[in-house]
Amino acid sequence: MAIKSFQGKRSKPTKGGASNIKVSDYMSRNLTTFSPDQSVMEVMNTLIKKKISGGPIVNDKNELLGIISEGDLMKEISNSRYHNHPMEDVKVKDHMVTAVETLDGEMNVFDAADKFLSSRRRRFPILENGKLVGLISQKDVLKAAIELKGQTW
Image: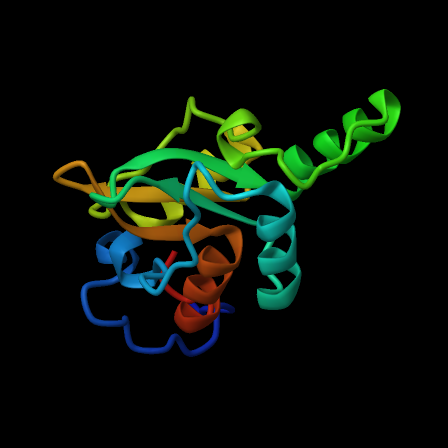
C-alpha cells in the first residue's frame, strides 16, 4: 500500500533558506533622524509629515543617543497642558528614551520577531562600529515573512 502525503507540493527553498535571512537584509537604511537639540514641535511635524511613529536621536558623528516616539511626545503634550507650559522651547533631549536596545544586523529576522514580541517595541536601531546604520521595524519583519510566503519556516 502506497503512503500519500497530504502536504501538497512545496515551493523550492529560497536562497539560503529562512535561517540566513538577516536583519540587515530587511532594515531601513534611509532614516529620518533627529538631533537632541531639536524642538519637540519640529519632531512632531516631521513624524506627521513623513507618516512615521518615531525615530532615532543621533549626534553629529551619527552615534545613537536615544529614540523619540509618538508616545514620548504624547506625554509631553499632556504634561505641558497640565502645567500650562508652552511647548515651543521644549527640546527632544529632555524627552527621548536613552536606554535603547539595539539588534545586530547579522541576527536572523525571525529571531528579531521574537525580540519584538518579548520587548513590545515597534522598532530597533542597528549599529555598526558604534554608528547608526539602520532601523528594523515590525513591518520589516512582516515584509520578510511575505517574501518567504511561509514556505520555509
